[in-house]
Image (cartoon, rainbow, N blue to C red):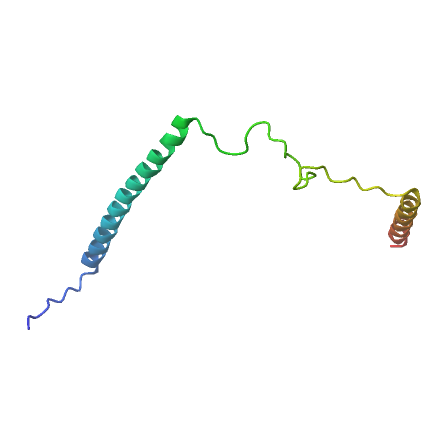
Length: 104
């Protein structure tokens, strides 16, 4: 069995590690170039056909108020009595807030 030479020089190990990392970076850069070529080749036919992405121009379904059937959602109507109750409740809240502010 051959004897292994003891190498206690840490700088040699670091150099080997750097060389390994450099080789990995080179491989990754080559793969990136290949993938970039695939992406560029995939975009060319779509642009040549004149197709565009996204919603077509003049689309009628622009708002959230449009239901699936294409009809506008009904507007909610509040009766006069309910409006009066809401108004009184809001006034009461503001009075309480003012009184707490003045008391503090």
